[in-house]
Length: 429
Image (cartoon, rainbow, N blue to C red; front, top):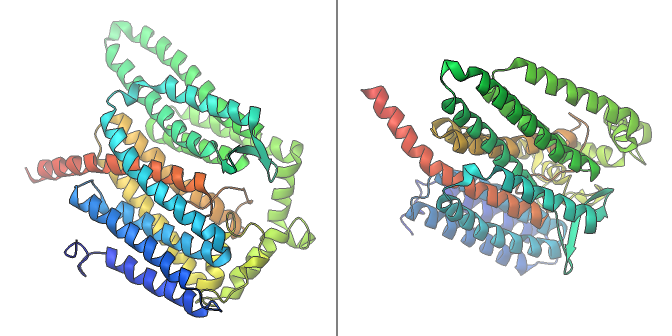
């Protein structure tokens, strides 16, 4: 293990960063709180042991986990700094998340018929939707939580993964359909079958989005549409479908502005939050104040006033990071997400099987678009929507589902390595 933690490996940057960050929080937190150091030790040891296992067992892209570990460490640090009790809960969710990361890695590798389970993925998602609508609780205006024994669970976090798997199954099945009817004499039958399958597929996609709209979960509905639209752009050559779906999204957005009060308020506060800075625009104005107060280098860990920002542990945690670590710290976080997306795209590029390629692309797009939506809302680039910042924001459902998706991507990365080597060998020949 000591060999794996040699100075040549980037895991050491994570260890050093954690020592400095948790050490500074301990120094500035008065009275001194030894639990800060214990928390930092637990997080760092957990990450190092997991990294050691990934490298030792040759589980694919080792940098994929390291990038997410940096984000998760920062999340634990900031949440503990804001709320000690929730900080400990976040560590517990991190332990569970990493355990499910390894579990999803091995389960995904063992299931061989995963590309033939489209209707099972869809049925599981519908069951989660129905359970949420039937027994779910409303928090902040969205009916998207299920309370179990004092703990809250957000089914839409799992539904995002099921949505990606559903899309991947459809395009894989379409490829198989083309191969089955490749004879010219059967082209009419192919066109008829493709039309029917597309109608069923679009109904499934928009039922996902429509049920999220019923729950008033606007951010997740937008996220799923962006994933669907981008996959459609990459893997379907029919420009008419892109125009049709783009037009539907535009009509839906305009209709939402005029007929849904919540969306209208969000757009108005995006355009001019200062018109009601003490009321409906309070969140975004406090976020901008916090980012501005941090300057380029930040006020220091534990020295800012992020408590003034509503929902700072979830939706607005990026503002707290910028206040205490500066704009450069915020840029560093964004670069980590860029690196995560880059590694995901690279994995998708070298995988040969279409289903696996689509799963890798879909999960990567999920991480990338979710980051863009929430950071874009926090810095007033786009209207604010209530979704979490992946691996950083407080929340067990978000963290656990993120690690489940990462486990699947990690499993796919192992296969992409062999594809990359085959490509390199072919180029040399």
